[in-house]
Length: 129
Image (cartoon, rainbow, N blue to C red; front, side):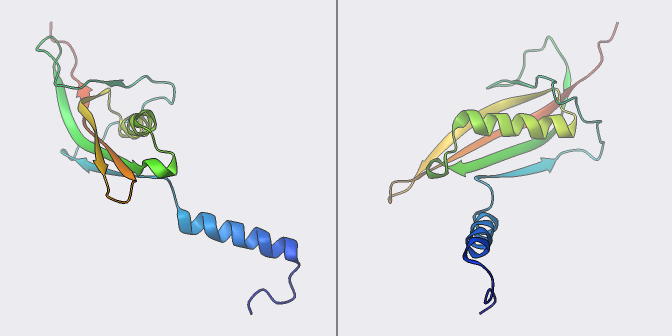
């Protein structure tokens, strides 16, 4: 046995760490870039706005990519958590906001539900005078 000669306390700790590694994160994410341009990340306190539709013609922007974040309700995932995870990805990619945002629920016959947040990341263009 690999852990022969190791104290019971260390075995329990080893088992706990192994389970955490196997379990992984409660959410998974995917980002697909639409442009080869890179934008500097936003400050961690930058508030990324989330809109359920495209923005009106009052402000111009570029769509730079699409984000998808998902997780199971049984793992404690909520729509709010998915939205916050998407905001964090947007900050890292330098986006100003997320448009066409929605959370979809996929119910499984065994009682669990998968939540999936999707949206497009945008960067506002400078105002033209």
